[in-house]
Length: 300
Image (cartoon, rainbow, N blue to C red; front, side, top):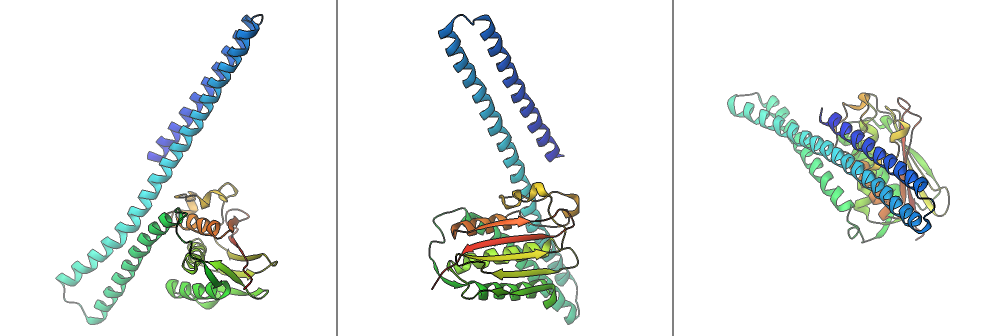
């Protein structure tokens, strides 16, 4: 209901801005027709009305952007609130059960395992928010070392399989073409970027996870990481927007996917800090998605 109200507000102010611009143009044209003989006044009148029109256009654009940013901020707050509230409620329920009832040791161990899992989920949500803050700070992550990117990707894949309880064939690695896949940068930041790309591919794969990871060096200047899933896909209009802060695809087939809308924003910020770029490829809904991360190659 709140999102619908904001969209209605955006449409209203957009129509208002267009109407004011049209009115100004009409007044300007009418004034020109009535005063076409007064050359100097005509010139200053045209400049004056041009400034009014430009101001209206800029004001309308700024207003629409602010409303959209506010909408995305509200979506982020709702997502983070859910990501924090759900595991806290789960932990509290298990603790109350342990306090009030005598349970077999095996069930107690199951409860402990679930509570630890919920704690990890809380920690990851907090870390994601903190990473987003660091990603927007250009002063952080300036320390750079030589990083074996191929080894880093394989380590991230092993950790991801363990975290999501995946079989080896669900997350496959395709051997890289070329040798010496080195980059210069922050190993911690690069590991965060790769983790986020892999986690995103798995989340949007649905029940059947089939993710292929390809690392290659197409030339002497670049290293390219491609993470391809066979999941829900991305509508063409959202291919660029998914890298914005707080942005989440709102299609009805993706409502079950939880998150903060910060993962790919962090990937983009890290890629840019390292002189690279990231983009998405998809044939559309139901056609899967490929996230491509390009980084400058480093010659030792």
